[in-house]
Image (cartoon, rainbow, N blue to C red; front, side, top):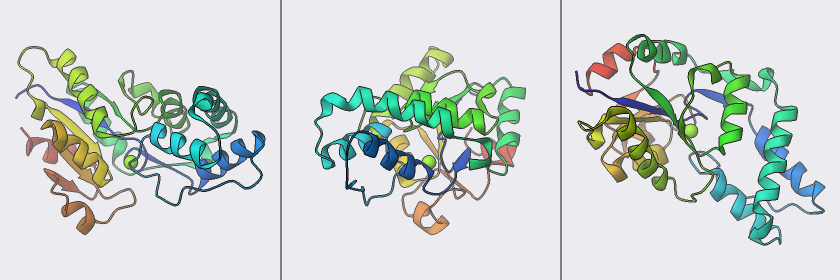
Length: 224
Ligand SMILES: [Mg+2]
């Protein structure tokens, strides 16, 4: 068996935060900064990096990007103070999937659009943070595909000289996750537990398309 590295997306793949929770939190945050009529971002947040979401909202609401770091810190602090386990829904099959890889000593990590701190806050409330100690995060890039390039470096560091791009397995619930894998020649595993249907995901041609991560041994054997 060729060594692999598994990189999980978070929202819609490992867990779901209550609908509109983060949107309300962000609106509240901008109001604290004196914005009277918060300008929403009509686009979905799914599959986008926090860097992309925040820089768009900062500009739409009349700030310049020099406030980015301050707002990021305020947002992650507010998330930490307010997010409860009750706001986080665990997704069926995730624990089985993680156990399969850890039992077989296959390294796992995160590949998420979340800021690093937000990622670990969400995982903590979902009871999953203990399984993850590494990953790439949406702190620095507006384009999710750049995360894949960092993911390649991370996976190469674990696997060593035998590493090939397809040994990085990117697991996610949106077309962005699929494109991200395709951008670097990684293996794209798409799962319908998020906000996209099987048909929508299928049209982006993932290597594997699943309705649940639960039967990991089966799908993992198909990407060897
Ligand atoms: Mg997602």
